[in-house]
Length: 447
Image (cartoon, rainbow, N blue to C red; front, side, top):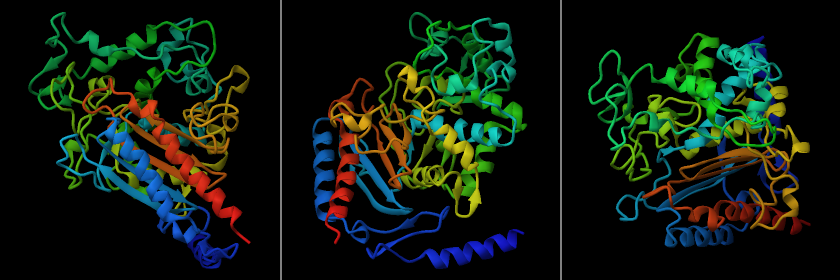
């Protein structure tokens, strides 16, 4: 049966490598792997696009929105734009390279626990409409949590607290570490590495879970973004699958997809790629954070979490976002069912003015009616599009209707997280808009 499938897939590939609408564009087979092409192959004005993108990013660097940036765009399975700008830091020593590895921050949420959750839904081991307490037993004892469904949690409709600063539990009033939670050297009870020379107590995760379990829930069920359960999801995934979360993700997704650098704790791996630094940390690590997760909560879990902790290149990100856009199929292999992916990527509670899918971010409701300054992301993206942003300055977006994948990587938190110019200048949406408008112009010029 498998042999027959690959024969048929090969024939389909041969048939579909044809001109689409006489434009010279290649129509790749559904579920194929990413190819490299060019803007010109899609009859786009490459000179104008490069000039416009350069202008926006140069302005961002001049205004200290970030020291450097990387942009990748794929259209119909073809990478047509991939360019690097600026440097790792403002000293202009290390230029940004196309294979640099970035701390993805909250983009981790849709590329870490979410694919696993979707796969477990496919297998019937999770049900988004059952109470989360059916799977996470401590919530059965919490009256305000026992009936919250996984659907409500993933759509940020559960009334959970947005964030808890667990770092406060580990520091004395003078800012020094409490010895019962940290050690400078690893031992049997302190083997989770938060940073070079900082080891967290192995059981600290249980303290975090207890605090989350007892945290307050708002009675007003409306959209409120919360990352708390994403700290729990890795443990839940491990309990259900019988495998450590990071190993499960490697085995089921990252390695078979061909994602070469994607994963947790890149500093512990022998990559030749440079890792882009994040912040000059003055609170926790008191030095430049590079190669170790920026998010403190993920750091306290040893760098392996569901809210943050993933690192990867733009090419890696393009692969998994293309898989999502192809409804769970990539290079002939099915990772997630089409039914589940479509369920997770559509708006769940629009009547409550909640734009979110299940885990995935979505455009503002009626986004196409807004100006660029008020839209999220660009007003031209389709209502079927989805993605997520990351605190460190990362952003990924897929648009099935327009067959576009957009990857934006930066370290906007360098040297400090107080820098919010990337938002004030609306840089990511502006670049997105350039591409959509270029395609619109190309269509208008067709005979």
